Image (cartoon, rainbow, N blue to C red; front, top):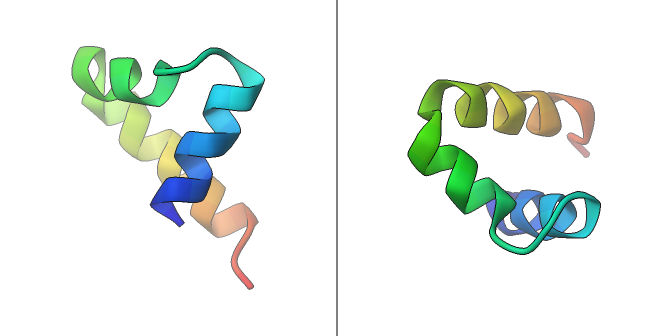
Amino acid sequence: MYELFIELTNQLFWDGYAEQLAKENPAVFQFEFAEFINSYQL
């Protein structure tokens, strides 16, 4: 799921968005990733 999250954010924003967010604001990154997982669970 992590790879899908990275790919989606790269498509929605810019390449490296998720990695940059994880470095600059890890709490927001974790929140966004958790929301992604909760929204797209199979």
